[in-house]
Amino acid sequence: MIDVLNNRYNFFKYRYLLVDNLVVLNEMSYLSKSSLLTYFGEQNLTTVLRTDLDYDPSQCPTLITLAKPEQFLDIEVIAEISEQAAIECFWPKRYVCSYIISDLNPAKIAQQLVNIGNNIATTLKEPYYPFFEPFRMQFLHEVGSAADRYWLNQKLTDIDYYYPSIYNGEFIQYKVAQPDQPNQNWSESYLYRLKHIRIIHTLVNTWANNRLQFQEQQQLSLVKDVIVQSTQLVEQAYQLNLTDIEDILFWGLNGLRYQSDFTQHPQVLALTKQTQTQPGTLSKRLIDAKIKIENDSFSRQ
Image (cartoon, rainbow, N blue to C red; front, side, top):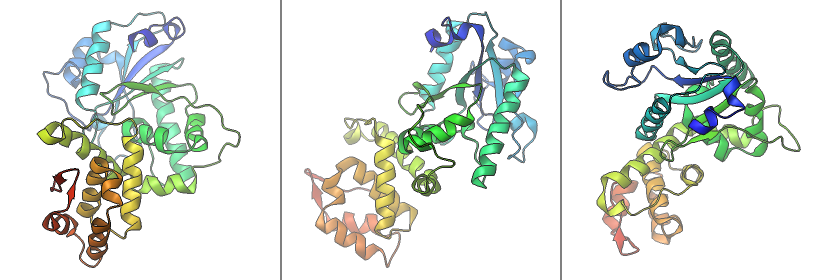
């Protein structure tokens, strides 16, 4: 990111880091609130007063002015941010939200972020603040249609936006080409998927963390379309009339691990159908059945 932030185009703009104070880092962290005050000074920390939170201002996000126009960024600072983004890429809520590049000064960009979020929330008739949730940004980028992605892109006026992805915290620019037929709102299919984003997020994080925790899963790769696959598996679970969260996650985790060998297995499907009358029993039914797939058997992991 240092090359992007310091390039000849962005060098003449403000470069910011947005962090979420609902996540509290250890005081020893280079990016903790006290460390930021020491390194950048209070004058370079701007509170983004979210109108959707019933918290005091100290818990609202902070916009850090990393560099003003015609100032070079410190490479060590960017390295620390990249390291933190990688550490937390599978946390339920993340501290590092985004890099933002803009001609707007700190006060104006902080207000602009809230205005954009409020405008989106008004259109959708529900709270929606994508800037503070990197997973939501990546979810839209990967799961939404071209028209869905562009709808949000139109709202990001005066902003170049880079969110940390689940892929080792790598930052991705949210930039979308205009489709042939732009939407006035998100499509019904995307809004339906958005309703299930929390369980999809949990599935992705659990799958990723299992690969680190369990030795037999460490050789499994984190494929680039894991968010898309997880979305499809959650949709399958609902189509199979699974309603219990544990059942849905069990279906999703084994679907990610064994793919169609699991999701199309006749015995698996038969036992899944039986689970409809007794929610919360899918894992026990399949484990007790001792179904073998690829010389392996199901577990609760």
